[in-house]
Length: 298
Image (cartoon, rainbow, N blue to C red; front, top):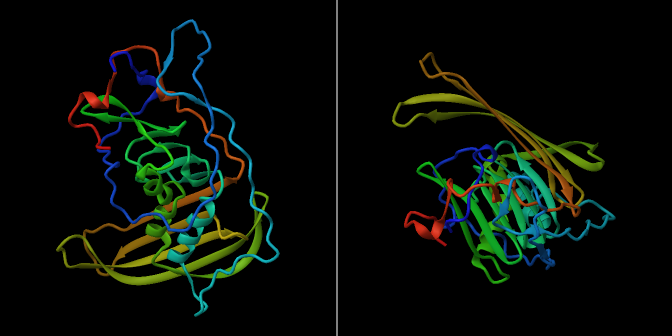
């Protein structure tokens, strides 16, 4: 599509995206509530500098908030344990029934309608496979980089598209949460209000000996301090997960601390937007994915 272009000032150059052949664990089999896909508008207001948008503008999203429960959903299993993987699975299954906005640290940010019928994604590490992905009106639009050039792609994203099911655990954050908090078991330590929502505060503090580095023979002590906020429906509203790795004996291997966060600040009231990168002012910096054999597969 030679006429398509992108303003370099609007984009950050990224690399190594290979996502649309994703073979990760599919989304839970539970049925999600069907939701209307927003209608689209293609009119662009006149500007001094001509701007062409290569994807349509979304209409306002419908509002459907969760109904208050008489009792909060039970978090512990039959053994009284609150497992991180179970928390992540329940979160994904419940959140997928509503529109939402979430941010997983610096990994990615998502605005989605129920069942991922339409969504906006911006980021690098959640696993969508392109730093900009935008689904609306039954089409999926992506923008990525390849050997220093920006690549635009468009494909079907109708109700029967296999991508719908594949994207659900990614967009709700379920897969990301499983990788971060899945191995741990939590206890409820208090109930509090967070951003106007009552949540149960869960914590796990763990210490363990692990091996670090490939074939180094070096062992290290890992200290985990993990906090999770869960609302009455089982939706994870906030996570702060910190891990500190210290060598078990004196070595050149450095201490390392990582902290990741996760937030869901809108449930049932989120609107979509068209990423700015899909509106362009010249035709020299972007190509259509179908023009190159190295384009991401459908």
